[in-house]
Image 1: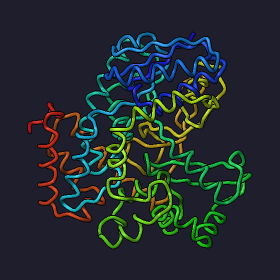
Image 2 (image 1 turned 180 degrees about the horizontal axis):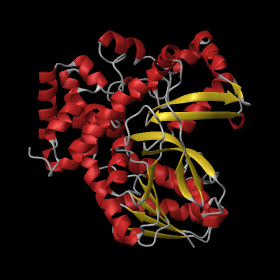
Image 3 (image 1 turned 90 degrees about the vertical axis):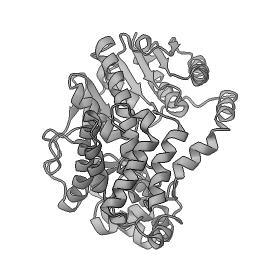
Image 4 (image 1 turned 60 degrees about the horizontal axis):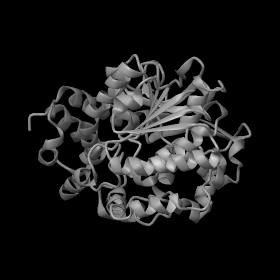
Length: 440
């Protein structure tokens, strides 16, 4: 019997779908699912959901629901982390303070001023989780879904190099299926090599039945206005940089200086797209605020369905666990790991998103080689800012945090150095109760 621990199990959507996927593998039908969250209310809801999945699937699995992290982790074979440190009324400052200074942010969970302050609040908690993993289940496979992905994984992997940790993002497979749909290719007939940094990795090749599909993608984008409008920012990036980027237009509009530095550019590229997230200001913040009063009703609606879908989804976690301590079917995925000889022209030791092979051997990142130079330059700027931010977080060094933000592509395109300093000071003040390691 295997044990899978969910830390931050109150993330209802993630936990529900990942438990469904895990139990769908024969090797895990009788697994122990350990649900841990600091919110007893959210924990009770996800406990009910997992019980429903087990009952409908007729699985001989068992569930533990606890607020005690040690109890959840003890002797776990796999760990999934989906936490959020600080609620919406804490991290709204990450988005609203930069806006006051002129930095227009769509999501703010990955990099730039908003992503860095989310990292400052979250890194200490992630390291505490790793400390417990090291004590209670040091051989476990640890899969992180929490953002900011790159900075958190970089900190965890540096401080606990003995643990098997990688970070997962669904943007790689999600974008691949979107591109396949655009060119009319069945998703089981496409293949690709994708590498870079989280939310800004690129498909270095994209093939349909082993033939280069990029000409078909370019044709679809340039000849079909509906397809162009679906992802305006990403399509512009592809047409000018020659490779397609992972993650939505809204996210990617934050990670460069081309789309959000002037109101007319925001209006043109970040407002009228038809994809799920074209780039509206504070998109995710507004979604979270709207859900504050409805999340219980949404969950009750799911729990009270006549039937629930038990079909396995596309998230990587269950496939990785199955490859390593399930039936041993090898599985290749894109994971976030430190760059030790993986991408030749990105900083040594930074967090990169590259192909990783999961097998009975564990997790083996695969060598990619150099990125095309135009992609490497863009990735380098962001990766080096992330490196500096992680250093600042681990040291409690405000000056390094300022320097990381003042070199962020979007921030530096909009603000002067003094304006950035003023903005960072105000963000530290707003977060002072959450950053005890900093002298604020």
